[in-house]
Length: 541
Image (cartoon, rainbow, N blue to C red; front, side):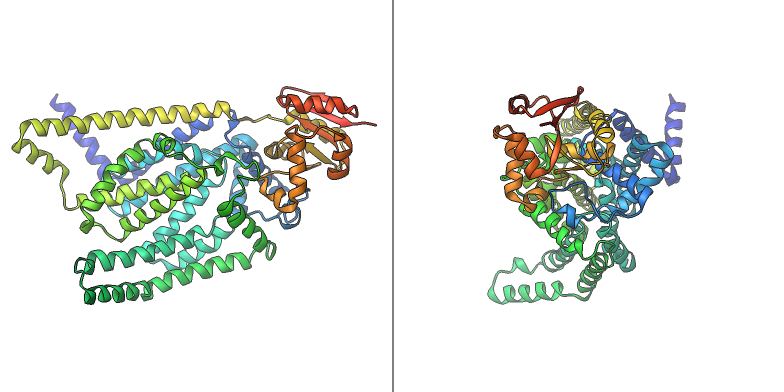
């Protein structure tokens, strides 16, 4: 078997010497994993239809400044395409490969780029076992689900982590450009400023607690010196420069914007009203805005969380070996953990930062602690303990790969419960052919809008994208809409809908049995269309 050993050694040397092969390997693995997941004929999130439609409209009509399709929301007057660059970059894929195939391929490419970018990040910082951490990031169920949404998730992560790299490496021009274009790419653009702030704080913590650990000497004079040192590091020239450039980039991105000044009001709604305050106790918001239970997060986080718990213990044991970067990723992980426990959607940031924290922290520790040498020494001291440690390590590796395979499989299976690509196509096309242009259509749920909008932009609708936009437009009108669609109001429906919503057509999910009964009992609704996705009732007097 000597030939086999020599062959394996030769392949290993070839791969190590030729970094291109490593990057190609990571790219191909990530690409085909995401392609396999996206091969299902559905979207995981209804907003994917909206993003696809926006890319098509921009390609046909240019920048969409006005948005009359949501008549009873603040977006009617204050619409901003806060994913503008994301939509722009999707256009070539749609034009070449078609709507659904192109948009799914676009999602695959973006997700793959983020994994390769992360791998390159690890290699740049000489992170040990970089391939392992790229694999953990790729296969974590919670993150795999979020990055597989045909939304701007991966697009945002790419820009954000490029920005973090620029902060680390003091590449100020690129940091400015990324801060500027992040505003044009993603509604949560303030994240790049948060990253800059946390990096500066990490520098201060490192300089004050690790490089010069004054906190160990707890007399009054030293505490005062510690405080002076902390303040001095906080307002260091480099920190001010990083924050200043990031703020200027964001400011110019807001002002030099095709939607200025409407974007000021919209950003307030998006970032504060929806992102921070959130009206989930008042309006029926999407599931991503509800808290993530710790037990579910632990299960969905898979290997990433299991591995990070071990690393976290080592992080505090070997705190003197940590550097600014690992401290930064510890702080960002803690931030996004708190946000994730508030709203599930932040898991798309929590998991990547968790993996980065594990990678950097463990690598800094292993610079001084040789794992292989440790195991060999353990075997010399105690044959039993050495064998036990080796067995546990092998067992954990096998279990980890099993968990990864399970997470990949179940993420793909989740597409079966997603939104079929032709969902609501029939009702939308019926209205397109029979309703008047610009006529307002009543519909059962706010998340019906993206599909209706994709298949029929000739008509206008009640509410969509987020119910908060309607609630902020008119709380009483939103409550009326909710009472009608949830069958809490049953009297004078035809008059109420015509008077308050100026609508004659009503698309009804047939699962709303009581709502259907209410319409039939009203006496002024006639069913004019039906299929597997829903029925259309028309007011006729």
